[in-house]
Length: 157
Image 1 (tube, one colour):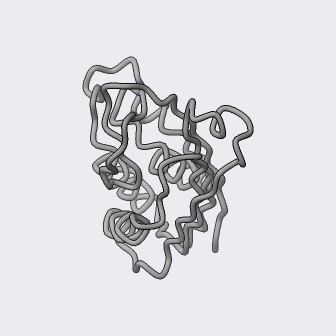
Image 2 (tube, one colour):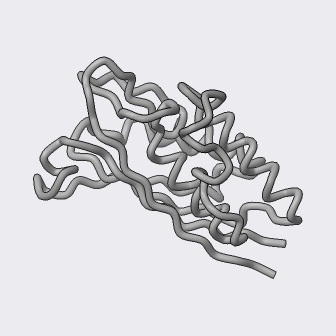
């Protein structure tokens, strides 16, 4: 048995924050604003996994009104989401995710992102796809106001 889920997340870029994507700290002049570390890629992935199993979203499991999650490491949250999915009898079949960012260039960091995600999900790197694209200077991501991410997860029982 398998189930498919889609996740989407967006965070505003701001000064004074680190840019963390896929658990990798990326040198950049600005970072993502959020209650946790604002790792937009991992947030989309978690939502796709939870959505596949009709378990809500990360806001339900890790609300931004809870001080426990202020500044939270999203890699730790992904490990918890993976454990929740295992408790339901499911494992990652594969994840396909796309980060939409005008800058910085993410290609040098994608291998490390895939490795981090695979480790947190307890699967092989070959089951994790991370891609990056720009929006050709269009919209809020193209204007470098924020970064967004989409993810599709296939969960297998």
